[in-house]
Picture 1 (spheres, helix red, strand yellow):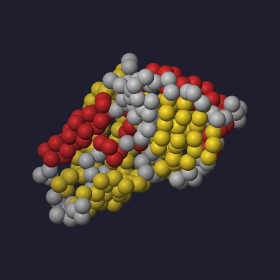
Picture 2 (cartoon, rainbow, N blue to C red; picture 1 turned 60 degrees about the horizontal axis):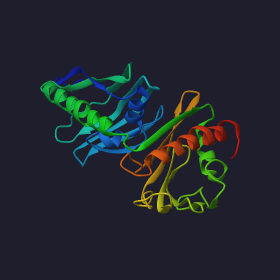
Picture 3 (tube, rainbow, N blue to C red; picture 1 turned 90 degrees about the horizontal axis):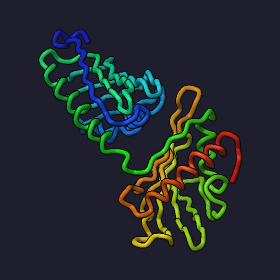
Length: 285
């Protein structure tokens, strides 16, 4: 960093989002690949997680989560970097997200605190504004049409992960199949009312489980009784100090679906009551 063409830079940009602070924080740490303009690889949801941004062979940076205060602050430190076109290296730079609740909205302040080439301040401003004011703002504003719900528990992430996989103890006793390993399949069937077949398409121990609904029939619907088919149930687990946050999304369960109202009421009960009680006290259905 002794190159005479380098200079210190501290640029801040702020946006207000019509979302509660918990939702904004969740998207910042869990959905980096959906709003950051470069290729993303790694993990970014927990303290000391590391991840890489890259643009083909020309641009690379390795980053580490060095501060994570749930619903308040996230700090990434650039631990390695190179732009091959001119050998620019911004290692040591921090990218800081700070969240402040404002009624039902959230003020998000982003700060780039590090180095740039002396002639690139305007470029830094342009990139930060694009990422925060355009990409991140639009992503969060348009997110959450899918049904989502979060619960917070005192149990560690590995316990939460294991309890999710014991489906017959919290979702339904009308369960057949297996639900613990990648590619496992299981069926929930309430004759005359509900049939759905799920396949485990993503399993990351202690972090994430995704079920794909490969077949379904909701007998009580009048239009399309297969509305659940090709939707996904996504369980994302985030450690938050001495607590664990479980964020559930039924991707594809949107307000336009005929089943939306009744299914969201059902998921509220299943996740907030049955799964919560099973995780926290071991109470089964």
